[in-house]
Length: 299
Ligand SMILES: *[C@@H]1O[C@H](CO)[C@@H](O)[C@H](O)[C@H]1NC(C)=O
Ligand SMILES: *[C@@H]1O[C@H](CO)[C@@H](O)[C@H](O)[C@H]1NC(C)=O
Ligand SMILES: *[C@@H]1O[C@H](CO)[C@@H](O)[C@H](O)[C@H]1NC(C)=O
Ligand SMILES: *[C@@H]1O[C@H](CO)[C@@H](O)[C@H](O)[C@H]1NC(C)=O
Image (cartoon, rainbow, N blue to C red; front, top):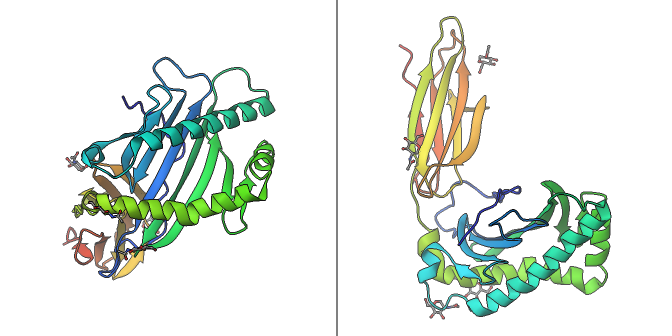
């Protein structure tokens, strides 16, 4: 059974254009989210790990079942991973992870209550090249430590993390290993997984777009542009005034819209005397070209 815990760290949207050019492939990402809880409430595992391909959960492991199990369409794919070996790997990581949680609690003398430690790491590739990677941890929802692969070193984001840094950098080779994991192993793994996953990850649902306005006499007219039912998550959504992109007054978040799709909206205020043409500009990889929806509400 998959038990979801509140995600304190959210999956980052790595940098990249909203609309891949035709010759480009991807971007694709592989990411792992680990959560450890010192005193799990009933029914909640002490440790759980979820792997994601792009934004889709691809396998899950927890301290109750102690088995890495493929999810969704990946449970039907043969030969993609040796799940027995993956379970052993996750078991080993669980141990290290929970030791780190205990160390931090000892440092803070946090013996009371329940504490949460989360880790997240992963990589991105585009056109078969590594284009990004990250590795960071949070303690009780606060940034704790992150890996900088350019130095390379663990960078503490909390005083208590100095101890963790010391431990994780006790030998120089540990740092080199972390760097190699992000820059080589992870992209290679992703490349291999892609061989089995492209059809699921290349799904493209173009956004439906609706433009609505709210007019109040003597006040700004509020224009709202809503894009919905789209996949993947990455989208460019803007109001333009006479062709110039306007800063949105509200919205901008990308929210789940059911069945694995997303929605987002942006808002702009139009002063009563303004006669310039306003349009909503939508860029998405499911659209052959950017979509422009003009606002015709003003007669
Ligand atoms: C991607 O790169 C790997 C090694 O870097 C290579 O083995 C593989 O053939 C490449 N795949 C494509 C589709 O170019
Ligand atoms: C890609 O997947 C096919 C099966 O779908 C498999 O036969 C082949 O060996 C895989 N190639 C790589 C490089 O993993
Ligand atoms: C997505 O959002 C739109 C607008 O909020 C809504 O009309 C639509 O029913 C939603 N789709 C699903 C599958 O929930
Ligand atoms: C009206 O809209 C203009 C242009 O978007 C903005 O600069 C201004 O602050 C808005 N005024 C109010 C009262 O919201």
